[in-house]
Length: 150
Image (spheres, rainbow, N blue to C red):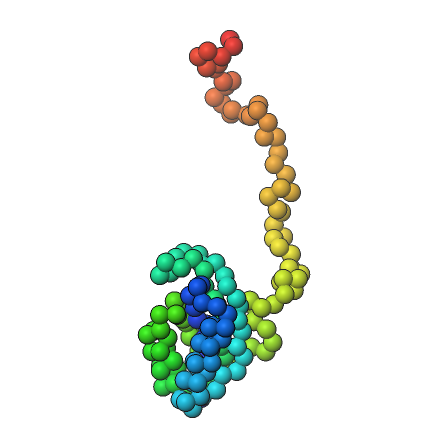
């Protein structure tokens, strides 16, 4: 059987309990098709980059699937018919990841490499002389404007 990682986005106006019920329904579809569901991670309610079907936020959920392609096709067909699912994506993998996904890792673990890597932060970089007297190159000094003190 093939291994897949499946992520779906559920509408923002659902409760967490309703999202869990959706996951159980989808687990049932996979098990009826002769497959199994491994890890299930609820990533929670997150903001979307752009609106999807008038929603600005969505509940993200990751499922590790081990199933035949026919069961996956049925799962995707049911998700396409459901009004509660905004988007879904399935990726075939060689093996499932061990431990937590990148989305579930603690912020401290991700920040060990530093927030900005080797780049200086905006407030830390050397800005040079950015005062009012800038070098105008070969254009010469600025002429006073009309009404300015001459």
